Image (tube, rainbow, N blue to C red; front, side, top):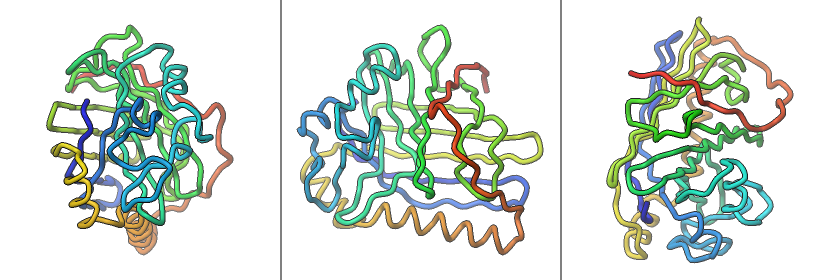
Length: 250
């Protein structure tokens, strides 16, 4: 996947309260090898209106992202990172998607790297157990093992679905524990990422991480006002990776 800016929307709907929201989002996809080499169109470990910091991802120590991803996936693929860049002064990314492709249109695996507002992270490794391509209609199931919201318990099951084309991105993550369900989505259309489009978009939307954090707290305040049950943060489980390989179809 070539370097792209995605202009899209993030949405969510919680069944137990009828609470839902949709807001605009700008995110990027970048070659992992270019990030490692410092050759990304977005500054890596340097100043910029939009920028990346390698230790925000993967091994979180500034070492090779490629080596980390290869070890996680136990194989080598064409790797792209779909992520929300840091602003000039702040960084927070609720979820980044590492796309492992074996040629154009052949999505073999996804690492969903999830971050919470509590400063913790967890990775879901999403793929078919037999290694076949992930089709747009495929749903891959995995247990929820990471606490991300005080209004949802740390149990239940995720369903992941991806619809990724050259100029269209769609990630759909549904959670349910039998009593409550939450549907979330991140979708977007692509623009080639060049210095011109980067400058134009960053000037229009300079504070994407700040916006994401503010919206999380705003939605939390709304749920608190509705007296939604509150779940205290439990100790994080180990290991910090979970497979999502059980298969279903729409």
